[in-house]
Amino acid sequence: MASSTFNLYDLPREELRLRLARWGFASVHAARLWSYLYLELADTFDAMPELPAKVRARLAAETHCGTLPTALATDSGDGFTHKYLLTLPDGERIETVLMRFTGRVTACVSSQVGCAMGCVFCATGQMGYTRHLTPGEIVAQAVHVARALRVSRPKLKTQNSEPKIQNPKSHEHDVPRLRNVVLMGMGEPLHNYDAVMTAVDILRDPNGLALGGERITLSTVGVVPGILRLAAEKRPLHLAVSLHAATQTERAALVPAAKKWPLDELMAACRTYSETTGRRIFYEWTLIEGRNDSPENARAIGALLRGLPAQVNLIPLNPTAGYAGAPTRSEAAKKFQRILADEFALPSTVRQRRGIDIAAGCGQLAFV
Ligand code: SAH
Ligand code: SF4
Image (cartoon, rainbow, N blue to C red; front, top):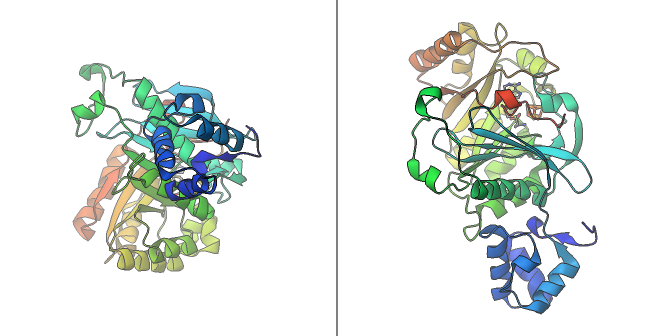
């Protein structure tokens, strides 16, 4: 794609309107272009016949639609998870995951090529940091998933060979549509704050993909300035914070970024976030056998989160090439949950292990 042209996916609707206005085109054309891009998911100007020829000619000369070509698409054995290796204009690659379970259709999108935070058990961290994604490269992943949903219906097997879908909503399978986006793919979204927020604005736009309300969740390793900025800007997102340990020493051993943003500063930022926004935070805890899954560990997180609006998401460790730990077994995970519930009235969930056969689980994304 010619680098002298700009990517239409980079611009929120109002900015797109202003660009077209500067070229002398009425806002009705900008509105039609927006609906071609995000309702019809068109990516060629030939597929936009209702735009006047002179508008299309100017668009073709000065812009492009940054669809990301698929280098590889993989489907999990159970048909619930689909992973896409997408190629960026400079040849770098990222992964995006489509999940169809727990009654939801969710896209897990990446915010960076690689990640600079170096969490020891994460495949993305193990590959190191290459670069930030642009807003358009983040938006293009959601559009990719929305397109994939249009062309393919879920191939769910019969119930007796299949784990049951929780809370099935049959209409979601009749009319598959992208319902949720989680910024939990490759990268640390708050390390790429501006691009991620522009992408979020585009994804939320009610005249487009309309992923407003409760539909976007951002997961951070604990970038304190980013959390405070989200709070100050009252960004309409769900926030998830990756804790993994309840003391500074234990956490820093798993999450090197904790040296820069220590646990006490992180918890103060989380408190400010919840007080300012009135929102509950999801705290993620990757359960590693013998490392952070004991009853004492459960009590430590319970004590740490006391008085905060919180829910704990427990993620049994997924395998990665660079880390030898094992996932907590299901009995121990249940015991962990019971302590949180009984002793601290702290709600928690254990994340379903899906897509592991195609390395599409949490922390498994890398372009290898
Ligand atoms: N960078 C962000 C979001 C991407 S990772 C963050 O760290 O929060 C999404 C979640 O998967 C995080 O909670 C992360 O700690 C967790 N994770 C990373 N590697 C994992 C692994 N191997 N097994 C299970 N969870 C993992
Ligand atoms: Fe980066 Fe998140 Fe992986 Fe840590 S867990 S290395 S912050 S992507």
